[in-house]
Length: 411
Image (cartoon, rainbow, N blue to C red; front, side, top):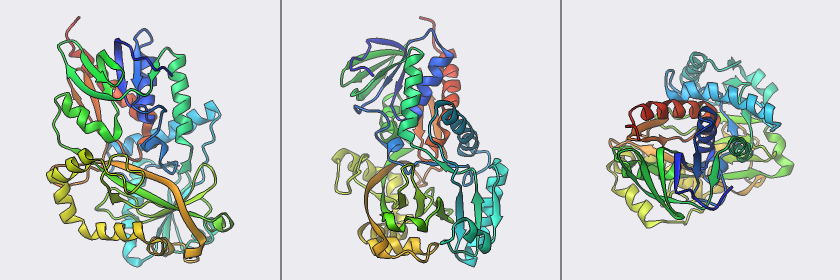
């Protein structure tokens, strides 16, 4: 990695999370004679959403058939497993159960099963309570879905490997380089950043929590806007980690893009409980008390935020209760692991911030959003399962950039 940004590059990727690095790698592979540069604001790669997830490789069950998430998650998971095998990275196919604990959840479980089958999720099947207990002896429910293709991986390690591929192919990574403004021109885009200025023939913006600001700077519509939600976790004490074999998930609320409180054995063997989904005052609020005035003001003045809060205020109260009360947090998870007790868990330093796009009408955008402006492709919404989908999403981004490049006037 470099600490000097070039004055000129053919293609610039803004953002060094897993999606940005995968996109840079794909672009360098397609255009070996071009100069491709990744600019990352932090001093390391995969610092934000990529490095703060629980590491789950999603199989593609939840997403509406035909959506980008559905298509890219299934393909991305397949390619991610293949890549990890090639590079010697530990990607465990631990499997997952989605547990219905009430009769009223069975119809939604059936809808999820239908979506998963339509999306081509490998091996997905419905199981009864007896088989659920064979797979997860401490789980309890009236029915469940079993997804053997769900797994877990260290996404920071994957991002590092992708970056190594990118640099080996001739790409350049510059860290500690926060892009603050961009000015589109007739034949290129001028990027102003913390290390000076870089002129780029074409730009890919994978800026995660800050994606909307850079999109607007390039002339894109301000709709949707990124609003941050913090996810906090608890951890099972090591002596009680046997309560969970792999991944135990609830049937999610169909009105929200969050998957609900779940129990996951992470890449390092810890069992995490969570996450919560609490509206916060900074786009990097890994600590609950962190507030960035600009972030908070932009969230609160966005019409979609106010409409979202009016619609989901009851959910907000529940999330706040989970955030401040371990007993409430544990009680939610006890619905599908009844043996779980308050004394079985401890606070975890692990937390994440989901950069959730909210539309002007108050709806929470539930698909990847990739848009285009002159000389630029913008990844406007890429929360989970973006890490799972990264290799497939990178191909889509590269295809879109080729389309943008076709409209670029000759130099």
